[in-house]
Length: 109
Length: 113
Image 1 (spheres, helix red, strand yellow):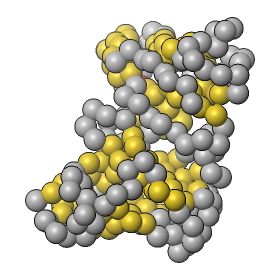
Image 2 (cartoon, chains in turn yellow, blue):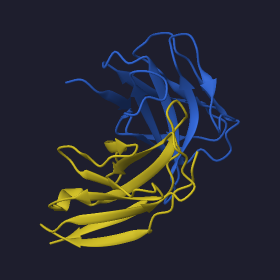
Image 3 (cartoon, chains in turn yellow, brown):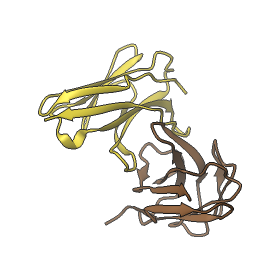
Image 4 (cartoon, one colour):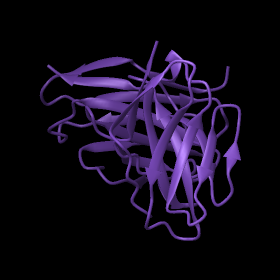
C-alpha cells in the first residue's frame, strides 16, 4: 500500500473552505484514496473515498490529481465541529487500513 | 439507533490483572476489528474477525486475546502479559472484511493503577 504524507496541522476560519492536502506519490493504479476523521477522544468517521475521478458527498469533496500522486479533501464551509484529525489512506481494496498521524485541523471562530 | 457500543468508557487495570473490553454492534456486520491508539499516534490493528468463530492477529496482538462467539459481539481481553496497556482502544465493524467504510465505537480508555 502506498505511503501518504500530510501536513501535521492546519487552521481554517469558520465558514471558509478547508483544503486538506495529501501526497501519495507512490500510489499504484488500483489503490483507492480514503479519508477518515477523528474528533478528539472519539472513534474515526469515514468521510469519502475515490480512485481516479473527483468525488463529492454530503460531507466533503475529494479532488484527485490527474497523475493520482496527490489529493485534496475539501470541506466547503468549515464549522467548529469540523475540528478534528483527518487521515488520508491509500491502499488496495481488501487490505487492512493503516491510520497514520494525519492532519490536525483547527477551525477558528 | 444502529451502531457500535463500547464499554466501559474508562477502565483501570491493576498489575497482573486481566481486563475485558466489551464491543457490541447491531449493524449486522460480519467483520469486526480492535485497534489501539497511543497519544498523538495513529491506530494500530490488534485483532480482527471476518466471521463468527474466526479471528486473526493484527500487527500488535501480543498480550491480547479475543473471542467471536456471536456476530454482534467481539470482546477484547488485555492480559497481564501486555506490559504497556495504557492506551485508547477502539472497536470497529464493517459489512465485510476490509470494506471501505468501517464504523467505530466511542472507545475505551485503559489506564494502569
